[in-house]
Image (cartoon, rainbow over all chains, first blue to last red; front, top):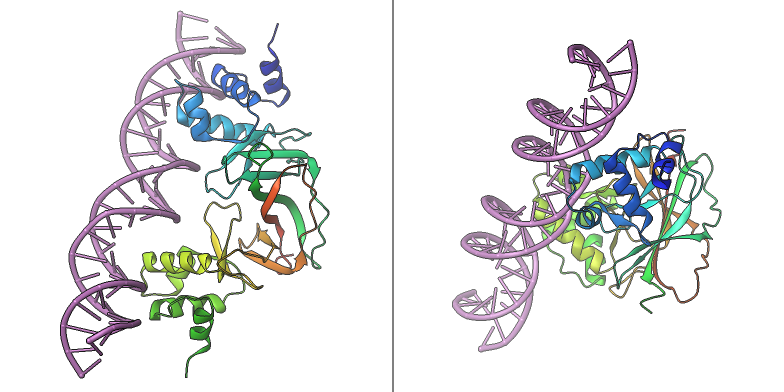
Length: 137
Length: 137
DNA sequence: CAGGCAATGCAATGGAATTGCATTTTTCAT
DNA sequence: ATGAAAAATGCAATTCCATTGCATTGCCTG
């Protein structure tokens, strides 16, 4: 009998090692996107480099996506839609609360279609909104 | 008789020192958003810290804006619309070309209105699109 | 059981922002 | 104009992370 976490990893073609299951398990508990340092702190004793490499692998395999929220340090969150190694398809927006400093994915809010000038080819769309979140209003 | 560069600085309530005029002059020449390191290289002999502090001040006074293009290192570009110390109002989108690695402001392309869930207060909107630019197609 | 590949951990590297402090430049009142 | 005060500058040091090299450990298979 395999755990759910294990099955998720396998379905993404990721070898389900103990460390990777820990990292994924931790990510599943989160309601916001978190940094490598956040995970490191919440997951003692764990090696930062191993977490880093797990996240990198997860990202390559379409299990998590990295969010640039303007703070300079990337945040990670589980992909919600059907992403895979070929590409990420969860084009929802990210919201950074300047009060609580949390970065949220808002998957229910779709990114409006953007019209680019001629000849520009779009590969990826990132929409980041800063403001005050619903909990901090 | 004051130079144009000097007048721009004064109009933004920035003391027009020699270094700051150099930095602004360099920014005026650019067609893409550039990093601190780019400016440092293009502006020898210039002190990195001074450029850094100039950009920081320019940004606070609404003369330039910092662009997060996902590379981790911020890029800077002159504000086009009427920004000031109270806030930035040039909500155009930014385009990062994964071929030439340039980051462009596309002021002519407006960001569509985004509907957020209740209670979220919006302060700032950043739309970053990655792809291939018109010159690299 | 042995050999080999994958995963891990430690230590080191490297890039870049940021800051403290001493020095230089500019401003301003006299 | 001139000297004191304030602002700007430059250097060196710090700090913070991501990233990588390499040696070790763990796991899987023949």
